[in-house]
Image 1 (cartoon, one colour):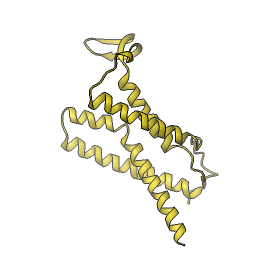
Image 2: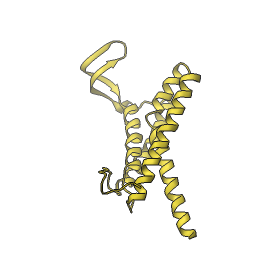
Image 3: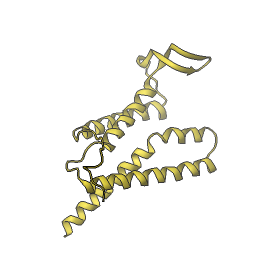
Image 4: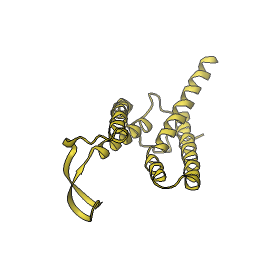
Length: 160
């Protein structure tokens, strides 16, 4: 079994899980509004600094005008998932650390299978969509595996 005292695992405080849920609950509807409904509110059209940008022309290290609704929706979901995945549990011990490690392993492994199948069977712009979703899939899988195992552990302790 892993020893939590021998491993420095940097986790966010437990209270940031609430922030994670809030960001996720804001980011998902905002992403639906932006990507599935195709809405680009004009007030998100601002000048931003771009290290690299390709629209009609390629620009390096310059200011461009961009609608940042895509970036905002992506960042709110990503930050929400990171806070949910890497915030401490109320009780953080060796068993929880072991569940974290196993969940991380399974999420990366399943993600690898998804990517492999995507390379073999999905083409064109749909593959690009899979790559974009791949920013979120490992975190979502990790959270599902981790929370499920913790839940299952709590149930088995009640039955004893």
